[in-house]
Image (cartoon, rainbow, N blue to C red; front, side, top):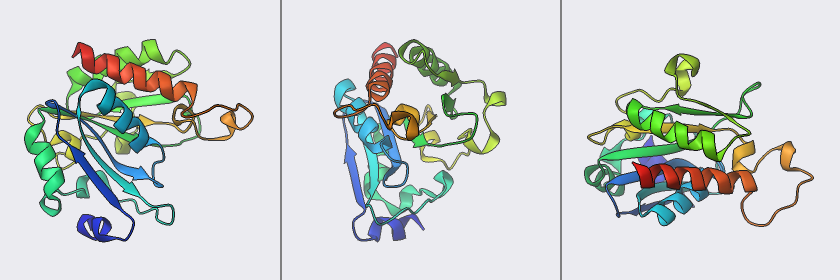
Length: 196
C-alpha cells in the first residue's frame, strides 16, 4: 500500500538528516493539511531530522500509520535508523475536540514533556497526554507505527483543525502566512525539543 502511494504522481517524499530527534508528517499535503508545513518549520528551527510525505491537491489517500512500512522506502529507513526518538504530527477533527491536542505514542516521558510545553504555548487549547483520555484509535501505540520504530520510540501528536489554521473559526480572521495559533504551536514544539 505505502509503496503504491509513494509511486503515485505528485506525491513528494522528503527526508533530512540532522539531529537524533526526528519530526514526521507522513500524512501531509492535501490529506492532513498543514502537518507537513508545521513539521518542516519545527525541524528547521530546532535542527531536528525530518521525514515528510506530501500528497497533491487531487489526492487524499489515508494509509493507517501501522502500514507506513519502511521496507518500501529507503528515505524512511534511513530516517528511522538515524534518529533515537521521533514526534509525528497528525491532523484530526472530532466534535467536542476542536480545541484539544492529543499526545499519544510509545514514549510516555517525551509525550508528557511535549504536552507540558504545549500547555504553555497554547493556553486556548486542552492538551491531553493521559492515554486513558485519548480515543483508542488516536493513541498511536501500534509497534509498526513509524513513530514508535526508533530505539526510544516516539510521540504521536494529533492536531485539530483550528491549531493548524483551518476551519470556520479562522474564516473572518485574516492573517498572512500561518495562523497565530500555528505559530504558537511551532514555538511550543521547538521549545520542547530544545529542553529535551
